[in-house]
Length: 456
Ligand code: SF4
Image (cartoon, rainbow, N blue to C red; front, top):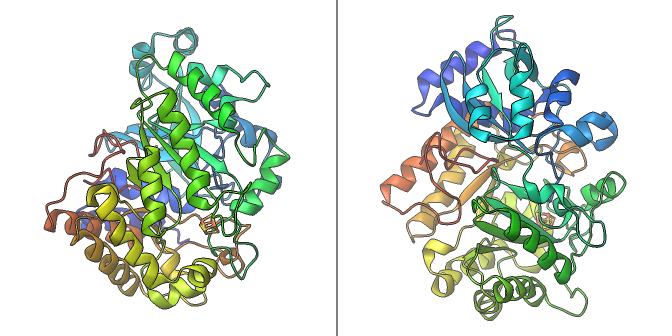
């Protein structure tokens, strides 16, 4: 990191037609953030990080304090400050060495939000003298200058309840995207096993091992627990903030409890839609499956299908997704994504790219231009067929194969240029906003692991 790093960020702001909020969000996702002890004390009262599928941290749990592990928030909203940020929601990826720090400051910026909440906890925070709030600072920015203020999400009522067996709702049906999305990792393990099969950027198996020691963390979620947890959400989320659920988890290569991947994941939507018909938009985040299996998912009640391709370049796919290459193959994977549009409708097929892995060492592109051009080709291919992919910002998690050869993520410019190309390709084909993500646009978007919805 250069001493004038913050100046470099401001240069990107001038060079690209991308809102500054989206640039800072992308940088926070790529580098992570840390909280001062006082900020963690403050954050304790709000909705905590649930580790809903991967670690999404830049360090292992062993490298974090107890407060960091249990009080850090799931997400934070960037607001106001010297750049007058519109509300921008960012997933929290912990990194004690990040240049971004959240700290407590005095002032009244968050008071408007707190007044609106009208809760006892908000009243207590408001009556503190002087009122405290959180701000985001960057170590290379001038001392005493904040980037923006930070607002946190109140812990929802259903997070204060437990299932009859004592498990917290945050284990079985945690919510992300500011409460919009219930994230149901039905199977917290992947049957792609070891460096020769696991996707090289993914820590699902290692994350399961480490989280098991830290919190309630169910490997295979029983359907009755899922229904019980959803009932608690249904009863207490009277404002209907939660609007969608994603059923996700590791790939199933042989079978799991006698069920194929399609049958295993289909049973969750079947049970949910039977008990709560149409209450939420159901999304299946599973592999690119043959047509007959995709029909099962649709028949079970899912409305959206996420067959995540991860990376566009064919050679890199082989290296980075060796299990997917061996069992399906990239060409077949792409064909299945396109075929799925016949079953779900093009608008309802949304494959994900993990943005940045195409620049990973040792095999990835060496320049930003090449990497952005490659992934933009993927965007264009799908969007020309009415399929709107999305992308998430790669988090270099330590317990992954790629972390052995990559200590730092790709440069920020890669993510900013990719955002611009994504939005421009989307506009070129005059596509509708992807369903199941809430409202698009700055100040309204809730998707927290990339800024793709903030820039639409
Ligand atoms: S298929 Fe790849 S990305 Fe998905 S859970 Fe398995 S290892 Fe992770």
